Image 1 (cartoon, each protein chain N blue to C red):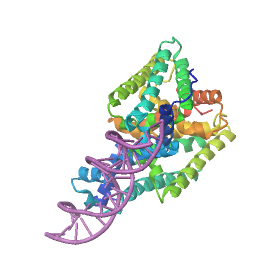
Image 2 (cartoon, helix red, strand yellow; image 1 turned 90 degrees about the vertical axis):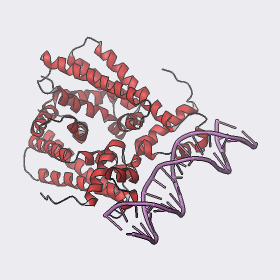
Image 3 (tube, protein in one colour; image 1 turned 120 degrees about the vertical axis):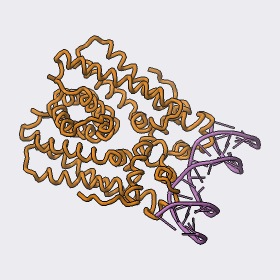
Image 4 (spheres, rainbow over the protein chains, first blue to last red; image 1 turned 30 degrees about the vertical axis):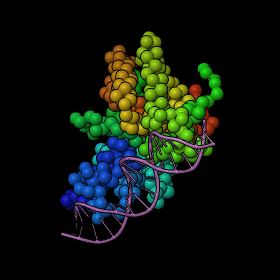
Length: 191
Length: 191
DNA sequence: GTCTATAAGGCGATAGAC
DNA sequence: GTCTATCGCCTTATAGAC
């Protein structure tokens, strides 16, 4: 893990992501970002080329981390249930490390310009891989025989919303959360 | 159920909700709404007072429907599991009837002005009622003993995201969906 | 009820001084 | 690297003709 001093560009991206989470990309102005940093809007352009570049930096790097995580899980040779537990852990880890970025990834991707097709491709491939794991689990009798579409929707929307919920619990233990989520998502809540 | 002819005001709200789902409240202009309706932006102001009024009309009416539904479920005297099934059905029903409005309810509530505190109040009370049902279920041994916060988060985020998913399945049967979701959310997917 | 014209201000981005 | 000043465009909303 690199631990170098945060560059001005990195600071802009960090501050912007936080504001994007609160109001959304379109409602945040370059003047808002600059004011939060204590400088003038024009000064931002010495470090970034455009507002769009900030959004791109936030979303694409995060989407690629999910793709890399799924690639590893796919090739792990584990059982379906263990692969699903690994996916849950992947989402808890990346969401807790990038709470603000996750908001843009979920809610502001439609404001991407040149990078939109690339983002859509990564997301589609991720969902295909996820569904493939579920279909194998059903085929080999590990999972109940319910439509894999509905299963994936249910699990993935919960995981994608983690960023909304993790910051609220200040005393949260991420291992506990991963364990509780695995139990609830895989085994249900009915005794 | 009223079946009167759609007024111009209702048309504006319907068209706006669809655009808000695609790009978010802040990124949709009055010109966008007007152009979709085939009129000029200035003409919209003969039917509504402001852009903010449109958002208010979309979000508050929907939030109040959820509150009314929860009130009925709370007083039903059913078991915890049956109350949860009724909540799932409530979300499937309201989401399928208001796909575009659900997007604003989830993503654009932070752009409410005067009505924001009222919206926050309705949402908090809904979540408190939901958690209360879960806590009773745990206390009486109907549900497994996992943190009710995590349970509620998991179920409620899935239900709140239904609007993203229902329109994709053109041939969907809402009773099937309710049944599948109940099975997955309550009993899990692990065989 | 819709139009044209316009007010009053905010937007992203650039030029050039320091 | 930050500033002031500014450009050209877009924003919500209003006034008043038809």
